[in-house]
Image (tube, rainbow, N blue to C red; front, top):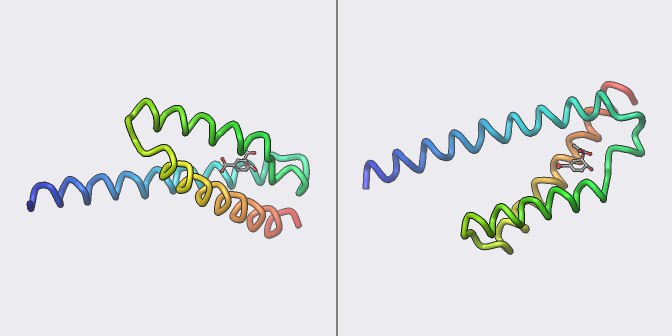
Length: 90
Ligand SMILES: C=C(O[C@@H]1C=C(C(=O)O)C=C[C@H]1O)C(=O)O
């Protein structure tokens, strides 16, 4: 069980590192987008959700669970992007 938990801990560290990388791209998006109205892009959100749904299916994961996690992640990402936009360009 010790090895299993060490593996879980390592995966969690990797997930958090990737989340930090993903949120870093939100900072870049807030810097690059033409205006505040472009921060929320529903077409792109649908595109991301569709890609993640396909990846979840391919990986044999529960697609509803992944969709729910990504719904939260994308909404948090948009909120963060608004925060960065308002702080730096508002
Ligand atoms: C990073 C973007 O901004 C937002 C964040 C998204 C995400 O977290 O994947 C998707 C759509 C956007 O509203 C983008 O437009 O690509």
